[in-house]
Image (cartoon, rainbow, N blue to C red; front, top):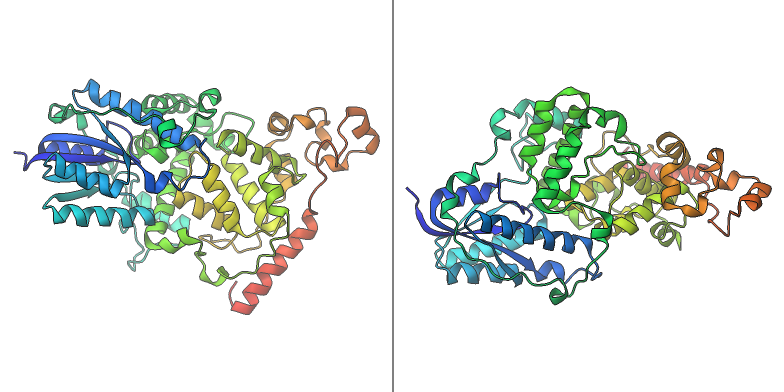
Length: 479
């Protein structure tokens, strides 16, 4: 028998009506279940750009979620305000006995959720929260000594040993949907919240639960080729599901189960990427300081990054003179997405070639990426800058030209985002400054005018980066 008369489910980064831990537990334990989503001003007011693709993606996905819940006889109350206040007021207003929500391990979210729980308890309203965004979280995968893992491969091995079919089972939400309360409210327009439509529709990104399902179906038809195709930005290699994972319009259990059941090299490689996601989330849980600009390896917190004037701006504006890096930055600026291989190349170039503090790049990605995830973004940037969770030492430095030659051999990706290089012959596309002056004149692409000359010399910068890290390691007595 249900133990609560009324419960409230607070949707956040879990915008779906199926395989949803908090929704399932509420439906199982309450006679009547109300659903709510809050456009949280604590988050939205901090966004500088009114044309933020993430807000538009969330807005469309919330609309789809409301329609899906209504189709099941329920509804979705949508608020615009300070979430920590709105949830308490709504729960008290509907005389809820309990509030259910899923975990969010971002440090700011943890503070918010603790405040909400305290306020609800003061109203004698019970609080229940659940794991939903990852397969294993927090202390679920630890070393034999009971400590968190700091290197991925041992974590992955332990993760795989821990996994059972039960961990991939979907929550059977539809078994109790007759308990959903048919209460909805109008969804505030983007403009009413201070935002404007972006080029999301023009980009053709599928949105909401149906969009996530569409992308998953498409990817499963080519997952066998994932291992071979994933590093080449000019071809259809990735799943493109990262934004759907970020906002929960797909279920991580659904994706991991699909990879597990599919088997094969491609599926195993993709599952490994999903495990990376769990890894970075558990790092964030145990080391929330990494989200506040602190290096995972504390000895590099005060590394004296030179930050040469103008280098960061040139990187942001795709003016470095290195085609693959500039094409990657244009992809980010124009679409809100960047191919994963290019994220590593761009981050390595900023930190190891331009000698710019990784925190600046991390913040730029945080502002621009539609799939921005605090745990993964922080972890990825620290990995690239050699200050984070990485078994390899700091002398791993990507050569941007060799990366270009290897992963965009014919320059298809480069030309798609740098049309000024469209006529550059294939043998010069990766390093157009090596093109003879007569050839530059002939094709109308004079380096330094039509396209920038290299802002730095990679070989020189590599030595400077090595010297920077070597000096710091020597002073700190750490390699």
